[in-house]
Image (cartoon, rainbow, N blue to C red; front, side, top):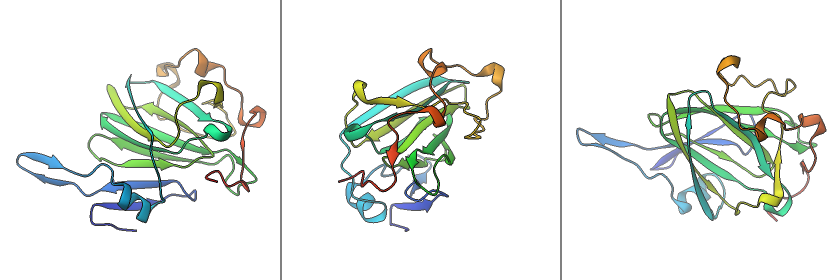
Length: 195
């Protein structure tokens, strides 16, 4: 649904959308509204974000695929302010017609695109530029006791991270996550995750 200050693009998975802000540029630079609660509620869904996060990563870093479980599950609105990443959302709602499917979107400081990932999805990204700064809003606070994750390289997911295997950089924790078929604390497609 186009808005005066943004365009919302549906993806192959219902609920996951790309937000393109309207950028006003001239010889001085540019300006855009990166978020309007009113316009977002009208064009995507009502959302109250409670935490903003920022990460800096170098080329080849893959972070993910992470999620928070139960009452700590999070929606995220992600954007890159410097560099370029491939951002990934994986549907982990058991019973969903798109269970195990993913959406991948290039976010960059140049395209100003944002990706909205609702609750019920795992998230990850790979860094395609020399370095990248990613910012994201969450609608629930981080809860370390509710961390869940699936393997970034699960062959059943078929994700092309666009990084050569010998250039991938992972945290020790991200090397040990289970495959989707072995993951616990997944979501139920029939459950209202916003209730």
